[in-house]
Amino acid sequence: MRAARLHGPDDVRVEDVPEPVGEVVVTVRAATTCGTDLKMLRHGHPTLAAYPAPFGHETAGERIDTGERVLVGDSVPCGTCPPCRAGRTHLCRAMTWVYGGFAERIAAPAAALHSIPGALPFSAAAMAEPLAACVHAVGRGTSERAVAVLGGGTIGLMLARLLVLDGRDVAVIDRHPERRAQADDLGARGVDALEPGAVALVFEAVGRPEAWHAALLLVAPGGRVVMVGGCPGGDVALPAVRIHYDEVDVVGAFHHRPAEIDEALLLLSTGAVDHAAFAGPTVGLDDLAAALVDPPFGAEARKLVVDPTR
Ligand SMILES: [Zn+2]
Ligand SMILES: [Zn+2]
Image (cartoon, rainbow, N blue to C red; front, top):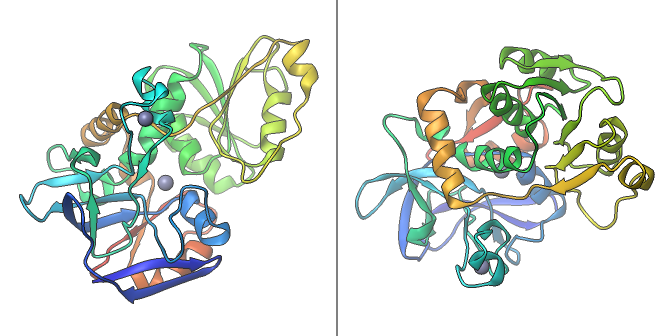
C-alpha cells in the first residue's frame, strides 16, 4: 500500500510499504494535520518510531473486518502503570502510540478505536483527537469567567470554542488578523494584545518559550496559567517572581484520556463545535509535505485533510 513516511528531518517520502499488521486494520478515509505533524517533519519527535517512521495521528476510516466507521485514537495506555492506576491514563509510562494515518491503511489495537457517531464525516471525526486534548486542557483550568487564550492556531481556537460553550468571556490573542476573525466567528474575541492582569486564567496554546513567558506576565496575581503548547527541547526560563510573589499557578495540559475522545466526537457530531471552522483543503499523500510547509490557506488556522486515495 502507499504511505507517507518520515526518513529524517524534512525528508518525507511517499512509498510502497508492506500491508500494516495489527489487531485491527482500518482503511483510512481522512487524516487531518496539525502543528505536531509539522514539528515531526521538521525536527522529529520524542514519540516517533525510528526512521523510516509512519506519521499522521488524527485518523478516521472504516474497519476492514466489520466496516464500522471509527476514529483511530493515537494512543493506548497500558492500564497498569502508576498513572494509569490513578486514572491519569494520558500520563501512561508505557503508552502505545498509534501513528500512520497518512497511508491507505493503518493497523491499531482495538482499544484505540472509537465509534464515529451518526453521519459525522470522516474528516470531522479525525479532529476529535486534537479536540479531546482541548477538552482535557479546559479541565486543567479554573472556573474563572474571563479567560485569555494565547495563540489562535487550531488548538487555541478549539480551546476558545469550548470555553465559549461553557459560558466564558474569551479573548484570543494572536498577531494575525485572519485568526482574530476566526476567533470572533467562534463567539470569542480576537485581540492582538491584552492588558497584563486583565484575566486570572490564561491558556498558552503556542508552544514556544516566549509564549510561556508572556503567559506568565499576562495573568492576574493569584491566577492560573495552563501550558497547552509543548515547547520543543529543554528548559524554559520563566519569571519566577510571578510564581512566588504573585502565587500564579502554572500547570501543564498534555494529551487526553479515551473518554475525552468520545466527548469530543459528541461535540463535533452535535455541531456544538463546527468542524468546518477548522477544515482546510483536501490533499493527497503526494502533496502533503509541501502543503504542511506552505499551507494553502495562508495565516488562517486550519487543518489539511489528507485523502490517501487521491
Ligand atoms: Zn494533532
Ligand atoms: Zn500506563
